Amino acid sequence: MNISGSVALVTGANRGLGRHFAQQLLERGAKKVYATARNPERVDLPGVEPLRLDITDPASVAAAAAAAGDVTLLINNAGIATYANLVTGDLDKIRLEMDTHFYGTLSMVRAFAPVLAAGGGGAIVNVLSALSWFSYDGANAYAAAKAAAWSLTNGVRLELRGQGTQVTGVHLGAAATDMMAGYEGDLLDPADVVRAALDGAEAGAYEVVVDEWSAHVKASLAGDPRAFYDAA
Figure (tube, rainbow, N blue to C red):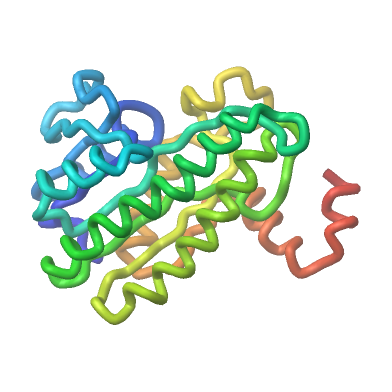
């Protein structure tokens, strides 16, 4: 994927990783960047084209695909963290996690797949998480939804290969964004996360594992889960 000259669309671009994606895409020579948000008036980055989008609303997704029919690079970044558990958590919050991270991402892929095909194939980048690979008491709904999004990423990569669409999944630990406000552990610089993600997309990577923690978690999948969770 050559970012220079591309037409990109970034979901959740009004803050956090999404804003960094939009900014770095411009810096790398993207011809146009659609910066989407549920409230596009909150997009404050010069040089982008703000576009209203709620990825959990099929009508909004369809409208965005119709308005941005020249997209060659789709960045599925929009997300939510409800901090709900599975057994006792609010079911509406659990459903919101799935509606956002799984069904919302799938809705975007389905809507923009024909757009990407018409432009020669293009690429999709899905922002996932180290929590795609482990669970954490207090955020199990998020972990389940990200695990589903990881499987989705691998699945649509196979399905879109025939039309020449590249699909990259990005896994990271905690980054210094509004979503992680109050987190007391080490935080990644969101600019570094986005730089690694875009480097991976340009290199044609199937998967970008941004940090050592995420790499450790992925490696643990080959072992006894008891060892990982006892240590954690």
